[in-house]
Amino acid sequence: MKCPFCACEESKVIDSRPTDEGERIRRRRECTSCGKRFTTYEIIESVPVIVVKKDRSREVFDRNKLFSGMLRACEKRPVSLDAIELAVDEIENSLQNSLDREVTSQRIGELAMEKLKSLDEVAYVRFASVYRQFKDINTFMEELAKLLSEK
Image (cartoon, rainbow, N blue to C red; front, side):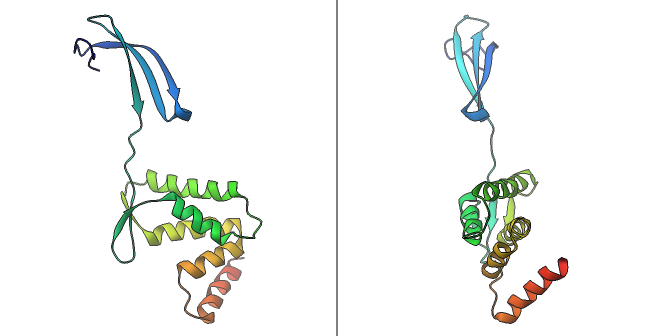
């Protein structure tokens, strides 16, 4: 780390502590040349996940969109906000930890349906009906039949 006072590239860390709920690290440094102290901050560099939509357009992943969609599906169901938040966190972590920087909206929908299936079956069917764009009652019944056969 270059000293802001004398431009020497050698310094030693005197104190190190986390800030912002562990999102950053604050380091107090001392220049080995001039002896002056300065503070640096270290943050995790996050690479955005890009969502490839059905029309082939691309946008940055927005966890709020996923959360609101899952929340809508769970409306008036016995599913806590914490459970939905945890499911969204798990999906987001899965996307961040994958080696792919681009993911299809279809994949995100599938991940959301997996989580909703374990949280509440009615919420799962609601989400699936919008996500898969059921054309008529027969496609809706096919999805219900699949759900029942898995039990």
